[in-house]
Image (tube, rainbow over all chains, first blue to last red; front, side, top):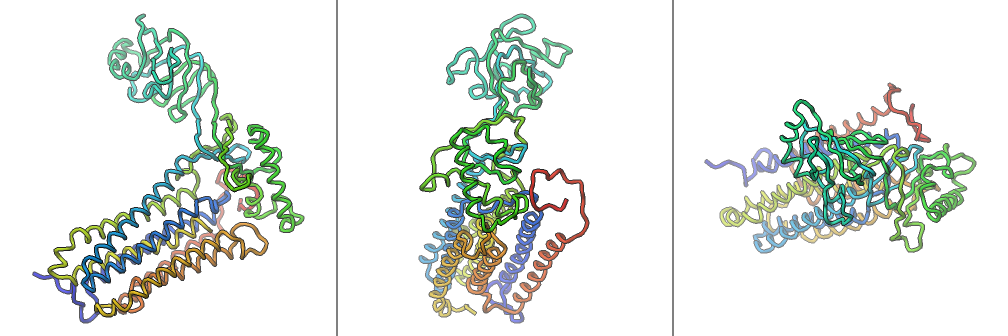
Length: 426
Length: 121
């Protein structure tokens, strides 16, 4: 039995079925994104930290906006071609639309990955540095013994990724030579991940009622351990998340970073900011000089007010120094290496969703929007690749379905038209 | 209603022009956001910039809705759906903003001693 009104309009409403359906669906989508937008407003108004303004690369955002607008135009042309029974043109415009969708997601992937590799350190006094290539590994020297918690999962622990996380007797970084240990029964063994995994039961049996096996090293060695694997840090031993205890001297517990920004917005007195002793002389001098120049530039606006009395925008304008701006030409390839001891750090993170509420709402909004782009693209691709049969039987029906898919696509473009200024410019 | 092939053909040029207009106004938005022409001496992004930026976005989206999505000659039932939606979305934003003026305060948040400036604590 034919479903009525899939192509011809109902006499009373003047609409065919899918048209009503898609507009109702778009109404619900408006509420979905409206809820997230009001979440954004809420977080921004209530933020107790300087809300990031123009921290995202506006050029990539603008490129994405233009890509999406172009794809909106081409999807209308695709629908129009179907209406005018021009099959070849329909395919052409649909292909361009799909390529634009792919391009949009590629740019988005570039943006997201650059955020996950960009790091942020907040010191206890409010100083901030950001940069790349962060190394927060703990370094232990003179490791004399390792206590394995044999009741735990053998897949975790320091010996899981040997080449990056430790080295034994040989200095050759490419050749992992596991350190040698003496087992409780006196045999010399090489301790690596394979050993732990294969001898898990043996280790358990060897120390029948014990929950831990201690292996003494034949020769003290140095080990660097990723901070994420560590649960407890002491001067003479560290405990990993799986219960492994490494007995050795804590040689270094710090975060090191190639910096691209020094932000002293939240510091009471910029000249005594906690980060300054860790900068090299030139960078420190450049940053402080830049700050005092900006104070001079904004003298009229500042007037007689003290720093604490200024509005947030002005505070940020004075104290947030991108190192690239310090050099003529606007771009510097120099990223001074800065190493800060862990005691000075209040918070460390990459620019992912956990950095602050701005980044969590950014990833939520753009991520959900990106999923909508993918979903819309799948629907349009379905019409492009399987539409020929329907075009031959009932071209008006296909035109209606493409129109409905196009309406969803325009909605996705609409959301981005609001997201771009909101997240990238304002 | 752009139902017949003839009417669609007549509108093709319009669709292209609207697309070009959208791209032009995207550039305008970027300029408003980045270049401090509307500042009254205040650095950074001011409320005026935000209002102008959102007005431009609203204008662009109305072009998309009216012309690309054919709202300028849709049926009454669709207009009713959209009116219903607009009322509820505005209500949702109003609730959010009203929550900000809620006088109940809680002193249980962590110290904001790092922060100089705004803060209701």
